[in-house]
Image 1 (cartoon, helix red, strand yellow):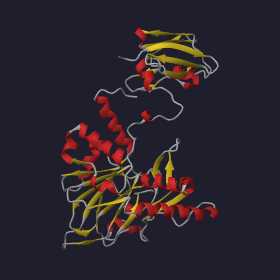
Image 2 (cartoon, rainbow, N blue to C red):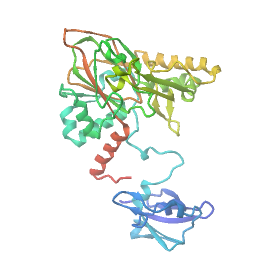
Image 3 (spheres, rainbow, N blue to C red):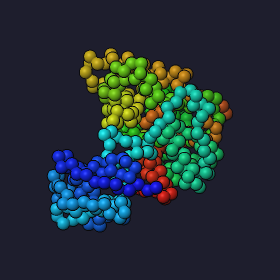
Image 4 (spheres, one colour):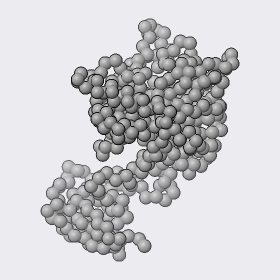
Length: 400
């Protein structure tokens, strides 16, 4: 049975309606918020879903003239002092309900998250490339898997360069960086990035030196002909929660102190610049563990590769920070928390760059003239969650 309005009561002290629904739940809405969010054609444009009324004309102390339950309980109708009438569908009011805490229904496309350790080795969600390209539901399921687990693998992708550009366009578009949209990760004798060598890479996130670091990373195996070169992944959210339980003071300082990150690729002779990534100098400051306003983890900012030598924090807090930082790293590198995966040609590892740390074992080129060839690119979470919402709306869910 559809939920309808049962009764409406005013609280003039708090300038708020107390609305009781047919299921006995009670919603509270401030008068001023209701006036600000009138859905009539003069106040709201349904095609763009933009508010068109001007807040400068809004009276923060407004009090309605009258209210009534209309349309058999399906609509709340309010008359305002300026001879304006607003109608609010009960279904919309339920979607917009306030809470004393931040409810997860506001953005179900980023939560909940399933934290994991070494057991994930045999549980990685897998998808077929063609299914994602041809089915909106599979596209949604794939993105939801990256939201929930932070990791998935796509199989049977073409072994052609720029395949991940096609995948990015299926979602929205790839993030443009100083490496371009797609970076070809292959051995280069003359390089400005350790990723282009055969050396191992410690666990890290990509590009923390940018103010807005990438959301989802796509790592496509174009050619796997190396001895070694396994990819390593750790759910740092899981490690952070363990640290919070065992050493809350360590967890706290990692959320508070801002760490400096930097990356530059400036050749001595500017006339020899051949790539954008040879001619840049980025800097940012972020906490190792970045929190949302409600205290949940938002992102991890971790890279010993690009962590700067300067550390602009009170000197008497440095020792404690290092104790916390090394403890977190011990958890990240523990066999009980890290998994190791070797991608085959035509496989794409997709992971949350703001949650998982990734690394690589050293490798040797197995055959002369055939190097290990990966390509990488990024999709920001704004684009990914936008696509998820659009798919759900086309399936009949009400947009919020």
